[in-house]
Amino acid sequence: MDELVVAFDRVSLSKILDIFEGTQRIQQPVVARRVLGEFSSELG
Image 1 (spheres, one colour):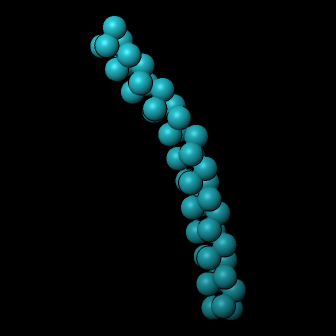
Image 2: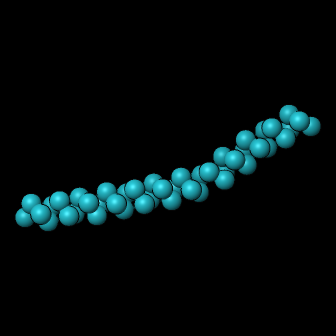
Image 3: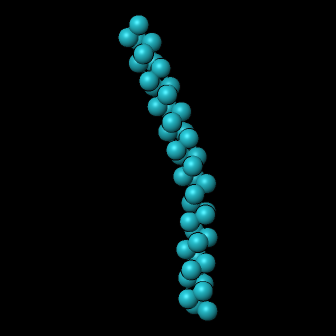
């Protein structure tokens, strides 16, 4: 039973990390566009 719980925890953690990593990949270009947009308005 303990092995089953450990295996479930590993799978759950792996899925959570995959979701977080995917979210981070989506957010990077969004943040970059905002930062570049702010700089471009300052430059002119």
